[in-house]
Image: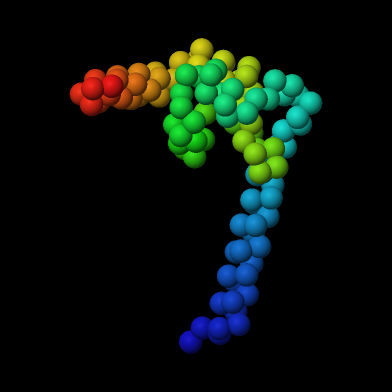
Length: 111
């Protein structure tokens, strides 16, 4: 029969190890001075041509470069331009398809 206190001790040790790993593997904090071209979501819409909802979707999938400043999302204009230049064909293709579908649906509605 296993001693329940030994089992608890083992699990606590495992949890401590996992927490320590999480602490040491944290990404380096972003210094805002290093990103002087931070923009808000509205400007990111203009920069990418994507609608706000789609940008939020990309952020949730971590498929677009972004930064958290407090509770707010910010985007580096330079990072966005580099991201687009690097070619995100699937994302860009999806955006084009979404726009085309939206256009077709609007035409059918008489819009």
